Length: 48
Image 1 (cartoon, rainbow, N blue to C red):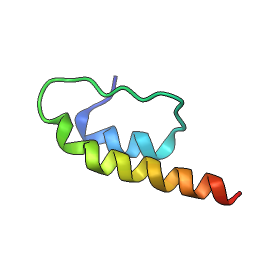
Image 2: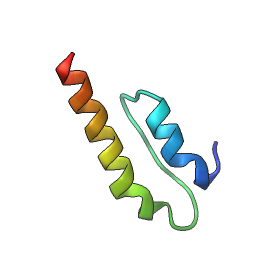
Image 3: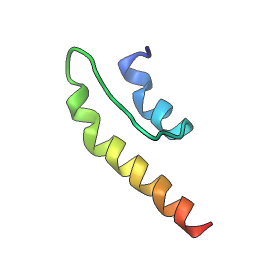
């Protein structure tokens, strides 16, 4: 488990086959940013 404020850094620093984000509050507000991070990482992977 991590703090809400650490979610984006966590997503940036790890590779995932599956990512599940659960929690109380407004984590749904992070979905667009999480999506962008994952898509950018996929683009970088495809360039290799």
